Length: 514
View 1 (tube, rainbow, N blue to C red):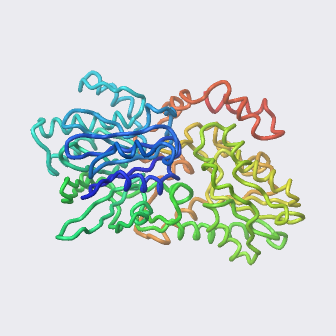
View 2: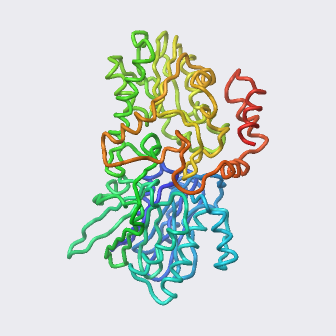
């Protein structure tokens, strides 16, 4: 998962894009990049690190121009964390194009071969974004014959691009001398939305980005979401055009965006993220009431920050006191998107501290947004017990994450997922809680539909194993895992679960990752 932004303005955009990326920092903390365009040339700077660390004053001064794109990144399925993978990517023909991408192409390997023997294009990195850029460049070359570009010819090229791509993609690209081209996959798996600022005399400045918070946070007006299978083109004078490239596209957004990824003050596809998370708490409260004796629960506590709305609603419906027992160090990144189990485990203790006064001799119901690898949950339960809790009930506002996500979220190996192949009781023992309660998938979907009834279905593969886009087979998943799994991973994961048998974990990992 990444955060992307593209802007066409009357004024220099370097600071504007920088500010937007700060608002999207939660979507990626591995690398950041900005490419600007002054009508003739591109200026680009990108590197590993947070936005505030990547861009210094000297870098910002070099980013000239009134249009540009930017991205914050963390590694997706099977990709590496290196500066060479940082986006945007650039290709010099036709015209010169820079591109940033949020998602994951499931047929990137096939496209890479096509680029080599059919299109005679060289792919320099292992990034599927560079593959996507070259597919787009190739089709624009054929559509325009290198003569000139307008919105119509760009959209014609995208008809061929859509026919070739499989997987998920939300894209912003800048074409030298012409303007901003952005488009979204036919399922709308990854988010993309449009913002505008009127500048008088019937003219507007435009922004396309991953989340509405980046639009509203810098003073633009949120216009709408980009529809699945739709493309928009904004020329350098601010003229806006759009076309529905794929007529039968249907909205099936990634439901994990609502659970965890998006900021609570964002709105995606007509849905307030904060409202969804409150509704998740409404449904979770019913599940908890049906499965446990609530008279034995003293307090309800969230794991800050994304589970707070759900926990507040759980406490309200159960009539139990809501307390904040965990203090969060806001200078530590999001543990879900940190690479490596050992790093995540260490970061949990650095990020959260349990306040003894809130736990001592209490039966505590802890609410978290989800349980992915189980490392964080295990550490949290241990912190609660160390702080004096006499009983720890753990509730997940999301269903068990049983399957890898291959559409741009970094949880591709089955062996990393604590719920893969395990029962709720087995997971409960692993994380060390007295009781574990999960949200039902149907209730999670209904929580979103309660706010936008027009959404028919969701990309929920991490919960149900149903992959809507691309040919995702067991062999495909095995190939991803082969890229990531090292001999050290088994030892690393085995140390994450206390007294859980190291030999048992070794056998399970070898079985699931073969």
